[in-house]
Image (cartoon, rainbow, N blue to C red; front, side, top):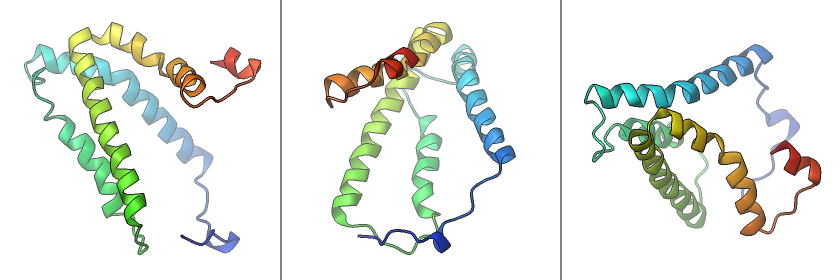
Length: 139
């Protein structure tokens, strides 16, 4: 177990400008992803039978642990749980990008934007989480 961080060991919070920049980049990547996948399919760069282009996505995600700068080691249980979540993410992203190439950008954008609704429904049905009327209205 890691000791809880003390007030002196907390890293400084990013500035509002830095946060806004990353939010805008995140939105830009989400908006352009289905369109760029369609361009890749049109030009023959994204074979529907091959997910090789996903290698860079997962290499970037895996690289976070390699370059985290932390000297702390994780327990085997924590590592196994993290690996399971990562494996589920690999399958989910492969299905996500396959859906993009098969359905086209318009249908993909509509389905992908409903992820919040699906998360709320599964949280209720699978996890038994109760939400207020205000939370359901916001969803």
